[in-house]
Picture 1 (cartoon, rainbow, N blue to C red):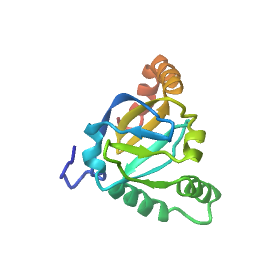
Picture 2 (cartoon, rainbow, N blue to C red; picture 1 turned 90 degrees about the vertical axis):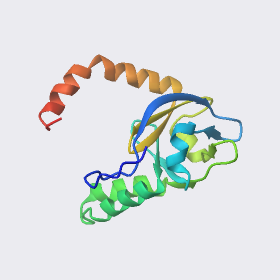
Picture 3 (cartoon, one colour; picture 1 turned 135 degrees about the vertical axis):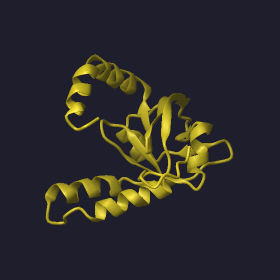
Length: 155
């Protein structure tokens, strides 16, 4: 889904939750609904909470631009930049709509067979199915508390 409103920073918005199998070669199908916004390819990298982040190339470039503005003198800035960039891999779709997940990223995210592919706004996340279910249930238990804390930020 593309938005042309100038106030929006991201060019795509991904939503939804899907379950796909990771094949023996390390390929996983990305939902057709997401592929149109990723047709030029994407960038897959280490995410947070042991998942993987998949960005459309345009949005990856916007993220890089923001990261370049982080102060080089701050250790956290250098560490986070290294964390995201060193683990990044460009991905393209094969004829069946699959991407290859490099072995080091599969290991990082504990991906083995069943993979939850979820849309989270400007990115897609890939999770091990069991880890995703556990994480989602933990967040659901404290959703009211999270909502109250976000209210302070104007959400």
